[in-house]
Length: 205
Image (spheres, rainbow, N blue to C red):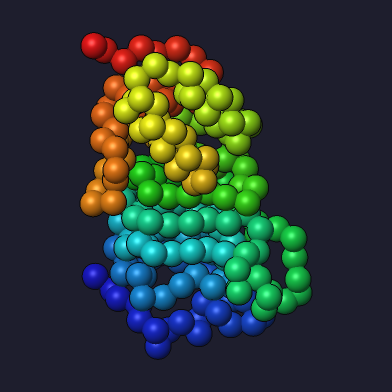
């Protein structure tokens, strides 16, 4: 495995931005560097270690991602401190034609206006794609407060809050971990996701 460390960070934060074209980062460990201002065109990231990446001002065009990406944030507009050093200033990060069909998107967030319709996404039933997501979450919260069982209502509100903040919708996983105050079962999560989708699902008793 090829490991990139901080000594190579300048490749990604150079101004004017570095352009990586037709590069293969397959199997590379990129966790110790950040994408910075770089532009990636037709690059491949098959089984690359990207955990911790926040692509606040990086651009990806026609790239391929495969395997577990880890916790990764892709931004449709320059954001954070990186946005201040983008030269020349721009309103959007170009992000189009990327292939995620073989990627695990469990902890991946697409935010600030990324058009998922212009990407190639996984086609299995683990994921759902929803338009008008903030409006759907708001409507689901209104429905959830009327649920009869308090424990289910509180847990579902937690799910809706997390989904609303991240903009992600994954249909077959639970939320847990040491900080979770309420256990979210598979059926309860599915019921919450159906509320967000505007469809009906009853929790088995």
